[in-house]
Length: 324
Image 1 (cartoon, rainbow, N blue to C red):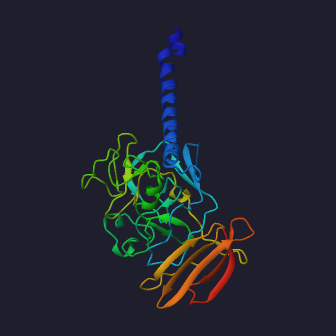
Image 2 (tube, rainbow, N blue to C red; image 1 turned 90 degrees about the vertical axis):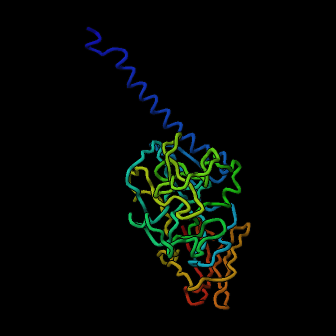
Image 3 (tube, rainbow, N blue to C red; image 1 turned 135 degrees about the horizontal axis):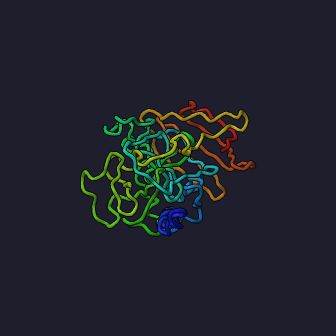
């Protein structure tokens, strides 16, 4: 009679066991995200906290490696540290059946730098995913530096392909090292399988991923396009809620900074230099004339004093304070 009224011991044990298993899976995923950052050696500049079913990877998106060198097709934007970039990684990833795209980051590298798809032409459609976009390929159009990244519309540094300079600095660099996490909760690896074997041709799907025994699914970088994650195969609650880095704001007017326009044919001799006091300068030439974008921290937190002479602005020297 007691078992009828209150249920058997086994009926209570099953939900309890399921809850415990669920908690372990969530904790294991949290530990995996934290370990990927710590084992790579980026804990000094990147923090990971787990809450509300997500691991939050927080950084200023500004990497400790060479920047902007090698760019020809510049958009006349420079990398400026973000105020705080919080990248949410689901701790219970669920594989979906419809690829999802967005015109912003699809994930984040273990050094806290956002990862975009390979294009620079806005959000890809479902049709775009199956057709290589030559004119929007940021690598082929020489918009990327030697590290696989550049500064975007928000003067935010991010990667569009394999982050080779970051990987060179990773303390655990190797095929089995996770180099980043997609915003659907699945890990990103390099060109090979984690066990070191090459990926069989045709094995990667449209998002540049494949099944994974440990995580259910994983993404890869590749020598050929799409080079890196180009869409999300996992479920995401709301793509609109994923982080973006907004353009700098003019301290005097409160307006966002105007985007640069790529000079036709590209520039020459682009050099980006950094000083210990936080001053940075991007110098380059175009059609025989010298141009530059320079900034240094102002007295206001998260603000910078800029001096620019750009092709976009007709070579006029402009100054101003801009803030995150």
